Amino acid sequence: MFVDPALAALLGGIAVLALGAFAIWATNVSERLRHEDTPAPAPVLPPGVADVLAVLRSSAVLVDRDETVLKASPAAHAYGIVAEDRLTHPELRHLARQVRRDGVIRESELELARGPVGRGTLVVRARVAPLGSELVLLMIEDHTEARRVEEVRRDFLENVSHELKTPVGGISLLAEALLGASDDPEAVRRFASRMQVESQRLTLLVQEIVDLSRLQVADTLRPPELLDVGPIVAEAVDRCRVRANAQQAELTVEVAPGAEDARVYGDADLLVTAVTNLVDNALAYSPPGRPVDVRTSIQDGLVAIAVTDEGVGIPVAEQSRIFERFYRVDPARSRSTGGTGLGLAVVKHVCANHGGEVKVASDGDGSTFTIRLPLAGADGRTPGPTSRVEAATASSTSAHGGGRPSEAAVVPTSGDAARVSS
View 1 (cartoon, helix red, strand yellow):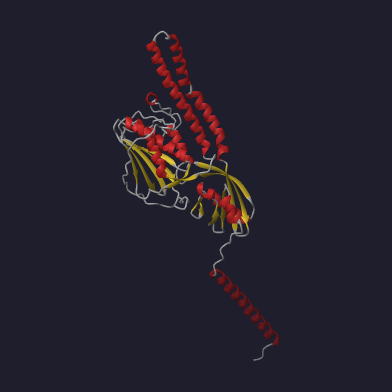
View 2 (view 1 turned 60 degrees about the vertical axis):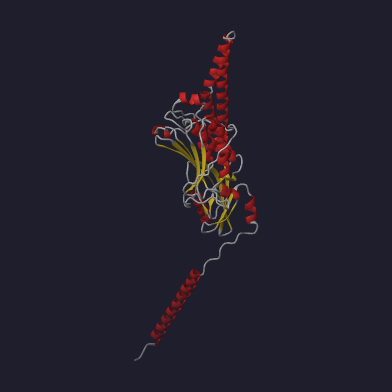
């Protein structure tokens, strides 16, 4: 059969083009599959970066394209910015993704949760910049103090102007009565005794107002330290020994299995003050001779310090308010025990400043106040929000003996139906 030469040439050209296109497609597919099968090399830290991050006081974190933390400064672990090998806060992860996407340095002020529980917050200024083509560097500065200074000043003026009037007015009236009874020795002794009580109350009130105001910014004044929980609880209990002996109450210290070496980041003096307040409160509002138990355990990656008394308890309707500053269920009972309404507020702020919380449980037959703080691991790192540590059953290791007078600003706040937040 005769075929036109021009047609044959055209068909041959089409066949050649088809074969060429197929060959190019097959080559591209093969190259793409080869790249998919070969894992991308892990990013390498630029020389000197690890050394620089290790000495920074601010929180610095270096993450790769998978948002895995390659290196973080000690401050980043101490403030809970990093847990294990991940950024703990979604706000920071989102900021890192934006910088990686467009390669532009970004700055933002963020309000971050201090820990997996509680309502404590950390106000930070984050500066995020690309470091090469694969890495992102986050520099995080704590601006919490600047945000809180105005709140502290306003609250301080409001509280002081109201609360100082009572003891100051009482001292003034007693001094006037003392002058009028100068020829009556018994009246002089009585009025002088009352003046001494009011002056001690005034001293305690001023001290606790100062302590509470300092607590609202104290966490920004010095960096957190890695602390053993055991010595903190032991010192707090020791401060309450004199009061316990006076009312023939037994102080029992229990450490659950697994909590013997529990550690947290924070300020030792503040944590001792918080635990002391709870123990002293339990003694003040418990009947004479009733025991008070202090138990340390691990719960879901948190250190739990629970103080339990055998008082009547706290009405359910009041439990949500007892941590408010100057709040009292029964002001008359508070005055008889020396309370100012600040004790539990101090405890609440200490816990918030450490990324934790304080809770109360009371069903009418005693009460349990529990401080929960983020647990620092054996390597000094803070476990992530999803890490879980099995809670252990209690093992009693009672501690007894003498002690010394309380040195903390202590205000009673746990016990009978007339319990107050003081």
